Length: 466
Image 1 (cartoon, rainbow, N blue to C red):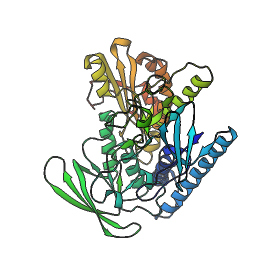
Image 2 (tube, helix red, strand yellow):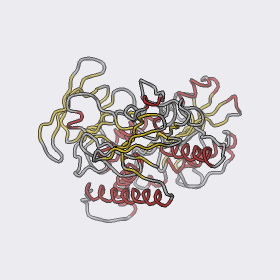
Image 3 (tube, one colour):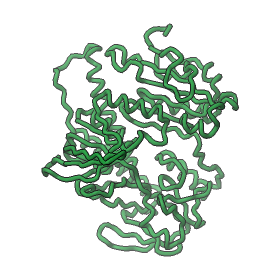
Image 4 (spheres, helix red, strand yellow):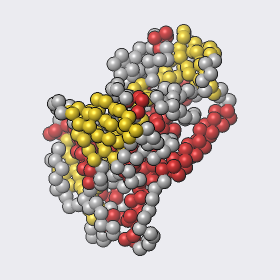
């Protein structure tokens, strides 16, 4: 049996079967990122000979309707798949009420009790709010954005997470006036050299940044779709107060685990009191042997959909098919779909220095200019690749970072190579495919850790001798 229930957002948004990724995460995010890329491609196309009227407009409602129609087809597909596998699906909120027993409450308030031999908690996370006047009344989160029934207009994005930067990126990419309010650093936990390059690129492309400020009050000046909101913010460094007016305020300041209201205390499952995360052993088993957990709610694990899928699949095989393979949480690749995409696998430079010592790592890097960008003559030397190697282990690659078009497609292949233990020597002996962006990874030159100066020539793919 599957229990799945979406508690509506403060603005009343909810969605169908499939979880965050499908409904309000990776899928709509990547599709709206694609909408922004198409806008850039339209601009580039003139230099390639395409002719069309000067004025090109984007229609928010057409985009959201198309995206939601696709998501609806996925929701239906999951329901059909569950039925075909004879899995009972209840659109009801589940909470433990005693050993081996859960209570399921549907949207009409009807309650049912169910018992089972084993339970798997995969409740994920929901966006965090600021806890200031007006935040839940007037602000939206990523849970609301992808089905927003009107164009958000001039938007303030609060936060510096990948969710914040991705949403800000595609909103600006479809032509909106976007400001990002950052409390401290961009992309905490990611390579900071790369994070700063992303910020610079976004700023150069018209996105405004307000740094070291946090909102303290949101007020509605005018009702509407969108209306007008006044945001009062305070400096994190002093007492300076600033005010600004926006049509929409999008909060992307982090997410909280959905573990505190599902009755875990009734069955004795231990959670981290500060974060709500659940500690598990290497078999995804909680301290209560018949209760397992996967996904974003796990303590000290990566918050990525494919990680949860892999962990769940392997768990079920171990429980019911006699398998023994455990989920490998090391060298998991990921991509941040900012306007300049960022693919990463393994250690950031900061984490590598902390783990192995600065004297034991070597950093190789290069800027590059994608061939497709040379004809429209834009963004020269903005793309970047960084390879981090462990000197003490035959210069094995322990960190892979690429900033450029199709970064996810590039990173996926190198993640497999890193699983196989690729070294810098093997990478250098690999012949590059010409002329593609991934070719840069076979030609990165040495640098000093922490420096952004390129000591190898940048790769401009214009001829066979580039």
